[in-house]
Image: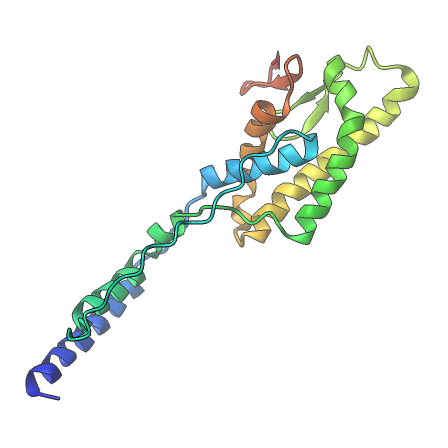
Length: 214
């Protein structure tokens, strides 16, 4: 190994060490992946309501193989800079979330529970007795058209469904190691329940809390 190569290697080591020190001072900010959350919400809502689900994301294209010049020496300087950039910009990489994890046993169990109940709730949505709230829950809007013997059943179904909804939003946040995302996930579902799950003629709450017919 010649003296020039040794000198270059020493410079690379120094650069890499400096990069590590800089990276240690960088605050990692992981932002809520709104697009991925909407995609996850649509998949779960479609499963619960029996609607046609969103298209399954295709696997990323495999990049073509690169050729290697056997005679060229490895560019250690570029490699070191590349590693330094990976250390310095983890926040940017963290924002590139393609999908949220919605495959945990808890999430699947809650989804199945809501799916089994949806058929019972649907007629109350259609009659206008039940509406979707702006907080991602369901609420009895007008029980006057519900027969007295059924009102207790409706109250129970609403309580059970809201319990599952709260648990679902919490489970998704936990499954993705960000419990602080709970409110964001809840609001995402509130929006998608109306846009994706509600049928024409169903009631939902607008941002001001007023009931509106879709």
